[in-house]
Length: 239
Image (cartoon, rainbow, N blue to C red):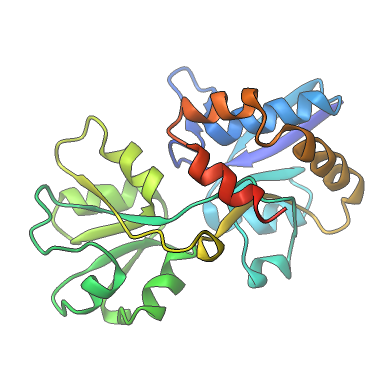
């Protein structure tokens, strides 16, 4: 049985390693789950974020790596059980000269510019905290946004706190700043997504996720990529 799964370049969750192979926490999670349900060949399809939902809807691939679940996205695709719950963070200039430790702090600085990825949930989070559209600079992908930050075109880049830490590792030109996580119930969850008509695959994946999520093997795999029990248990609480 062969299956195609799409991913983008967003460490530590999924990215293309040297040599061209897909890797990351969610790539490993998908592999463990899909092998357990009888998939023998997994094809990883690199794509762009804005093509995730149309691609799986149109049958160009069978499923997407986990992304944040929103009511708007759920109108177009079917989501699996949640696999992680993640708070947001910023990448900023070293020393965080504008003291940007969250969306409200950035909104209060009229001269601050925030980089975001088109279609991602951080845009809505920023706007709800009062960040004006004139402060938002939209990019197609994470590498493009980080390059703009390093070049001084923006003051911060919004992503997950874990993703920000991963991007800052080994890069002295940027610094990661985590937002306050707040109550676990308020932290958004991520899940695999499928075409709405692909009921058999969704059911099989969900059944295996119920068995596997939170297991010692799952926790050990995720820990290698910086995903801790905090992010896992917050998702398990929503099952």
